[in-house]
Length: 303
Ligand code: NCD
Image 1 (cartoon, rainbow, N blue to C red):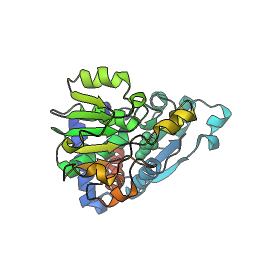
Image 2 (cartoon, helix red, strand yellow):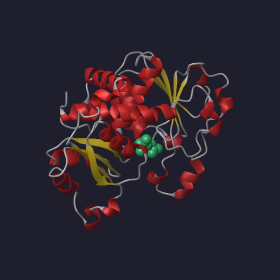
Image 3 (tube, rainbow, N blue to C red):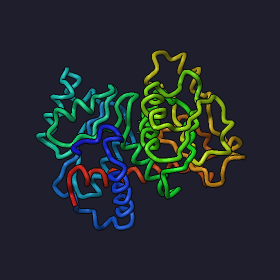
Image 4 (cartoon, rainbow, N blue to C red):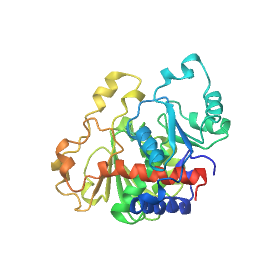
């Protein structure tokens, strides 16, 4: 495997190896601090980001490597009309590995085909976000010690939320999982997720517009309504506040419910929930760095 474009580029065994590597890094960080000496990561971000870009950058720095890149399209030659393929070919002359975020679905794949170095999809439009999924999987593993027989609720913008699509793809590969897809009708998961992922793997799922299944959930994955992917502001304003997680909605939830969110949060989780012991979203941020360290090591072939 040269690149990571979709979470399914990794086999279940490879995923497990990455999780094990991340856990080893967490326990023995000093052993890894020079592993990527003289290696360079390029972060090519054509869309806003706080966590993903800085998490990749800290991951590379903690491995002893260095980082170059840009954080907005306007400061790169794409503003002059350069293609993604040409940019990727150019960066291959400077760096050892690329992490790319782009508003267009498929752009990181185009980059991967043109680049001679590994390319990691750091989010492509409303499509996929495999490294957030690695982050989510490490969080689930550390909280639950398993990936099977879990009831997972996804809530919010399931249509444009790329992290949802990638995590459903990942969790669909394990036995006994079921999904409750909580969203307004207009923001349900895309058809291909139902036909090619959920139905194909014969998974149980339910689409709903209420919180009635809260008491049965093992994981609740909240998401932000993706304003930047809406065609008109009026629709965004109408839909953004439909699902807000408050402490009272959690009264009958399981004691060991794991509440996740890829962040950034706008207002879909009330601040009071942050101090609930079931809130895991800031732990997710930390785990993201370790799993990205493991991924960089794997793609660079560093032992
Ligand atoms: C997510 C993304 O960019 O898709 N953020 C992230 O990478 N942690 C979620 C979002 O923007 O809502």
